[in-house]
Length: 404
Image 1 (cartoon, rainbow, N blue to C red):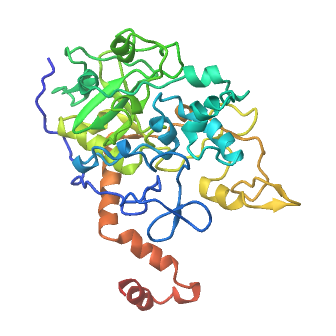
Image 2: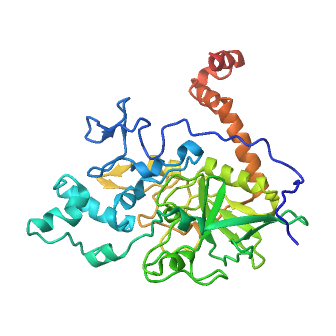
Image 3: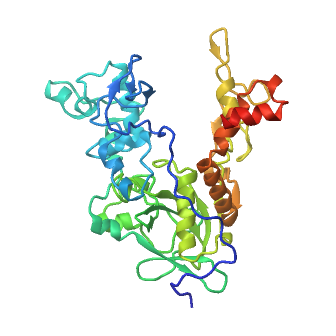
């Protein structure tokens, strides 16, 4: 019978390094929280560099997205979800962004976005904004559940059991019953060294199928099936340590881990924390696989009519460079081979573009990379790349240039 005692794995990856991102945060948030205007009209940091920010909301990012960071929860809500978390009704972010773009096109009436969206125009006798692409009833009814009661959040906590026979991880609910997520998996977050998980509800009025425990905990907790349940639901948009999707089999054994979350956009550090968390419970990391498509920058673009999973040749970096090409004022998409790519390419689902690697292999890769970042190896490589080609033949010159 599986027991809750950690076991010794056959091989431990290199020492875990809990490193933070020292580069500018991807959300563009200023560390001191001050927002100033850049001369270009966008928000600017104290250094004068422009960064992303929404006009017409009280804070960029919203203050709640920073809560928990002092305890090691470094993953903040992505900027695309800032409107959703700022909205007192927590309407679906994609729909809010449609209205926000329209508000920008109008010249930011009433200065504050939600004043224009919900109240001031109506108070002056004007109808509430109603866009044909996202009708007002759809906007108002399509909401995301945000849990603010810690007791309700605690109901989603899960347990991890390491099987002494093979070291595989068994994920159990609070009653000790193994969880069968089905092929779609459950969404999870890691916060304050506790794993929380649930089925994801992606469409209002209809919870997703799959799993052996019937309706989602979100429906049980609220008595409603109308609200979406996303990664931001567990703690109302607060910072977390990691987020993604896990898949278990009928015995509850962890078989796959996906760093997929549109709200938190997990990166290397987030995945490293998740793997270290499972290892602390004695789980043998080689017993499950991890999707590395985001970390390895695997393209999800597909040509029109292409079969699922058939990619457009090239890579994201080259696409970004080459997509700046214009001809007669018309935008051209050029693939990595220098050829004109189909203009109507679209992205396939993440689950159709999986790049799976063993959990132990991923842990070793990330730990070594973290160590190289800490020791400045990549910084030295970047310095070498800036050396003129005609000077690269001299080893002494390269070493002196790097060391200085």
